[in-house]
Image (cartoon, rainbow, N blue to C red; front, side, top):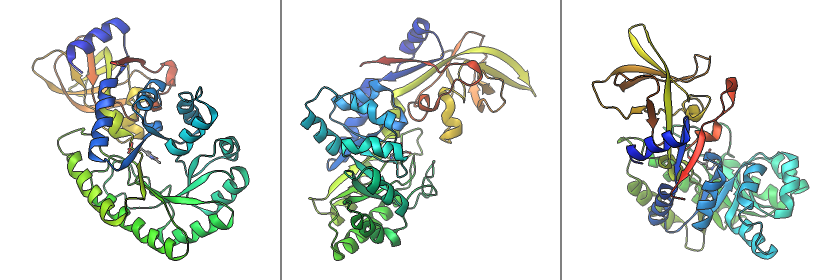
Length: 377
Ligand SMILES: Cc1ncc(COP(=O)(O)O)c(C=O)c1O
């Protein structure tokens, strides 16, 4: 997004402002499709559940990974007017409920939609069999998350050694396991995580087959890294390595799914805030802005992500701290930004902030989330 547009939008709409560029969403989606022609793309709605973003991916023919009933309904509103049969086909073909742990109430509500859901343990099988017996299953595996910015394997995933027993257990309970899923951790810059996970899955497919269970799909999850800086490996290289192993180990009739989130939306989001205070503390220039880690910059805490603050004004820079507006010292966006001398009322902005940002913004301390503006819709 060019600087002039950002400034105009900030003037027009006020700050804090969170701008979503739908051309960028479309570009990222097309890039993913180009490099993974065999893979069905399920946008991970949690990453930014704004209905307008979901609609854009829907219009592109996208599929969806949802992890709560609210997210399910955000997707479902796009298909609410379709004839019942078409709606049911869409849910089965294009929605996966990819939260391995589901409350009973959720399962009861989901059952009517007969979706594909993930699971990773015995208790969940019993719950699904009782409250959502029409669901299809994908077994979520624990796989290496080495070096990923956000680690997920400590919370979810069956051990590879127990996988086929868990598949058999689901069948004993009258359920069908369609395939396997995994997540290598978010912002995964280590291709080995995907390669090892794909190898583990190939082994489990073979073992399952030898015990009479024919798995039909492999869900390679999310983790595809956004190009936050030059250290992130090229997406085309990562895709080439993954595709090579998928094609080598999984025959064409096996459906391959992925649940990218960050990769699709990170670069489509830009935050613009205003300097509301300024002080020098311990010889360091400190800026206070009207957005912070309880708001659009929540990814600093939850996503372990660092965002750079940029100014529209040029000039000699110095090392500065940038804080959010709340009365909490945790509300620190960065202690190491290179910024020029700026006046109160001037803007700062961060790009590449579309993922895990507005999605986890709060109303803490009485400050509402940033206003959201969509461009190129
Ligand atoms: C099950 C599942 N799928 C997909 C995603 C999206 O991951 P990413 O944004 O790294 O692509 C997540 C993120 O937590 C997830 O939990």
